[in-house]
Structure formats: structure tokens, C-alpha cells
Length: 308
Image (cartoon, rainbow, N blue to C red; front, side):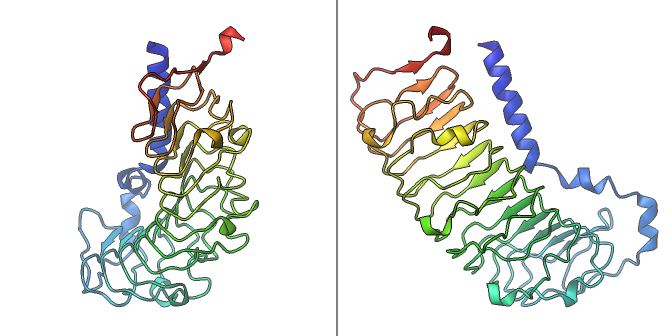
């Protein structure tokens, strides 16, 4: 039991380290001696903390356009404004940008100038949540590690948009308007290092095709999924956390060995239509089944490889 707990905590640490790399860690990579090469200009609409000279805070200012970004800036905060367009002009000197937060604005696909994002060669984190995007913006910077596009109106993913994003570890598309037809067999091609994929709160009726093989966390809550295909998880042998709450899964929609997956430690199946507990693997540590139709006397069937 101690070993299982240790393994679980180790996995949690490894997964969390993907998207909790702190600003301070990256900030420390910049030698303070180099700051003298940059002037300390600051757009009048924004705040430039003297103790953090490569950050620019322009959030909650009622801005309708992006101000000129100084060359020294690595971290750009533009959330909670009224910005509609992302053009190349403000970023002409911003060649060191690592982090851009454009959440909660009014950005549309037509408002993003062609090629402006891909020219940000050093960008690692791009936040475009709570905007008015109807498709995943393209092209994207090839070095991206996190792409957050939750709560838009995305119904389309352009062909090949992820094909060069080998460094991407987190893709968040939850609460959009994705149908099954938007997720083709090659949609996620190229995401060789993806660890978390969030497609919760969309309009899926089927399990998505060709999930990247290294995925550790797969979130599919609040869709209308009815069936788990036979051997579906053999293509993602490292999946550890699986969320399928608030779907339409029934007993008939789950194969007899559907969740007999040794890698899964946390399985969430709450708010479905199950009347019995599906067979699980002996390595599973957390099973969530509340708000189904399961009778209290149902028997838990556990696949134990030691008994085979």
C-alpha cells in the first residue's frame, strides 16, 4: 500500500510539474546583468514592477488594443480587457516573450493577424480562454508548452494545426462547441509529448480518435458519450487520470475489459447511466461512481494480473 501511495504521489508530482512551472523559475534564467541592455520604458496603460522587470501587467485596464511591448518583456498579462485584435505591430520588439495571457477579451479569429503568433518564436504559454474564437488559431509558435482555449466557440480544428507542436504538454479545449466530426484521426498528430488533454463540456457522442500515446490525463466530462470502443485505451498506455463524468455511458456501452487498464489510477464515471460496477484493474486507486443507477448489492469485479 505504501508503494502504491508513493507511486501515485510521484505521478501527481510529475504531471503537475508540467503546468506549474513557476514564473520565478523561468525568471531566474534571465541574468540580471542583462537587464541593463534594455531601457525601462513602460506603456502608460500598464504597470511595470521594478522588482520584476521582464513582466508587464496590462490586465483589467479596459484596453481595446494591445500597447507596444518593450523588448525586455517575457511575461505579458492582458486578461480582462476589451481587446478584439492581435496584430504584429505591438510585438515588433518583443522577441523574448515566453508567456501571454489574453483571457477574457473579445478576440475573434479574424482579429488575429496572419502569422502573428507563429512569429513569437520563444513563446511557451498562450492563454486565450473566454474569447470569441470559432476555431483553433493557426499557425502557432512551434515551441509552445501550454495552449489554453477554454470557453470559446470553437467548432473547428484546422488540418495540421498541431503537427509541429512537439513540445506541447497541455491542451485545454474544454467548454467549446466541438462535435465528433471536428476530431479526425490525424487531429492530434504531432503532439508527441502531450500529457493533459481536456475536451470536457463539448458536444461529443463518441470517444475521440487517436489520442496522443503519452497522454496521462484525459478529461471528457459533460459530453454525450455512450460507448467505450473495444481496446480503446491500448493506444494510450500511460493514461493515469480519466474523467468521464456527466456522459451517457450504460452497462452495454462498456466492453467487459474496457477499464482493465493497469495505468489508470483515478477513474471518474459519476453521473452516467450505469446499473452495475464495471470491471476494473487491481491497480486502480480511486473510483467515482456516484449518481448512477447502481444497486447497493452490486459486486465489484477486479482484474488481478497475479491471478491470471
